[in-house]
Length: 213
Ligand code: PCA
Image (tube, rainbow, N blue to C red; front, top):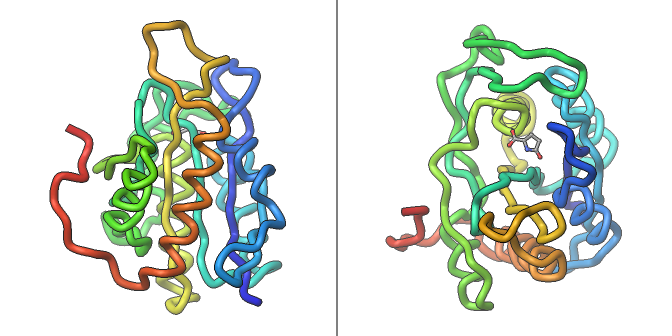
């Protein structure tokens, strides 16, 4: 049975929890479409997060890597289309680092596209009444950093492994009423569907209208 590596992030920016961590913990050890899910936690720290991710990849030899992160303020589950080669932090990471306009890989390309079937994932989630949309930017903080680090590692050393990044909204406990959120159970179900779609669709489908407006 092949492994699927599913990572979440520790809380950051003074928050008590990070739903991405809870989701990865909840789905850890599940079997989905004859694949075993291995959950792992990444520090919200530039550099250290990529180091830990590479360590987990070496350890588990996954067929697919899906990294999760929190995007507070978004209303949908958002598979990310593109990782860009820049760190530009609006706030310090959990180690106090705040890089500005710093390339992630000196000689790396400007960007990598996700090799997850992002449109198929959106279609699958909407079929199950879960709000979902493709996102065109993962930002320039630690999530984009890890996403870029993942795609760079796969491009250089593991071209047969597919991977990408999915941002999730706040859970209701983290928000005031005017900020969007999704219940934890709904998000966990969503990520299970996303994993199943990633296994099923080795190539993405062509469909419009899936983007965040
Ligand atoms: N979200 C942050 C970093 C960790 C997380 O869960 C981001 O979007 O960059």
